[in-house]
Image (cartoon, rainbow, N blue to C red; front, side, top):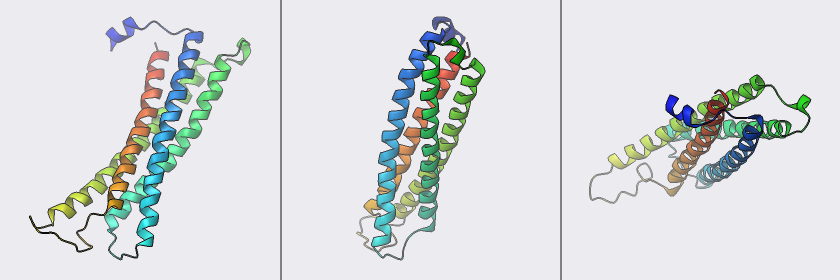
Length: 189
C-alpha cells in the first residue's frame, strides 16, 4: 500500500474535487442501475409468488427475500447519501473558499458512506447465501435421473430471480464501498 501511495500524488482541492465529481457520478449511476435491476427482480419474485397461489413457499427463502428487501432499503439510503456527495462536490468546486467544506467533514461523509455500503454488502451476501442454500437443498433432494414435478422440490424461475436480485445488490453495495474507500484512501494521504 505504501508503494501505491508513493506513485499517487497527494490530492489538491481542485484535483480531488474533479475526481470526486467523476467517481461520485459513476458510483451513483452504477448503484442506481444495479439497484433498479435488483428491485425489479425481487418485486417480480414477490408478486409472482403471491399470484401463483402455491402454499409451498419455503420460509428460509422468505427470509432471503426479506433480507434482500432490507438490502434494497440500505441501498436507497446509500443513493440518498450519494446526493450528499454531489452537494460536497459543488461546495468543493465553488470559487468562494469560505464555502469549501473542511477535510474532516469530507472524511466523515465518506466514512459514513463506506459503513453503509459495508452493511448493505453484508446483508446482500447473507441473502444470497440463504437463497442459494435453499436452491442447492432442492436440487440435492431430487433423485438422479428422475423428473420431479412436486411443488416442494421444483426450482421455479422466480427462485432464480431472488438470487439475481441479491447478487445485483452485492454489486451495487460493492460499487459504493469501493468508491468511498478509494476516495477516503486518496484523501487521507
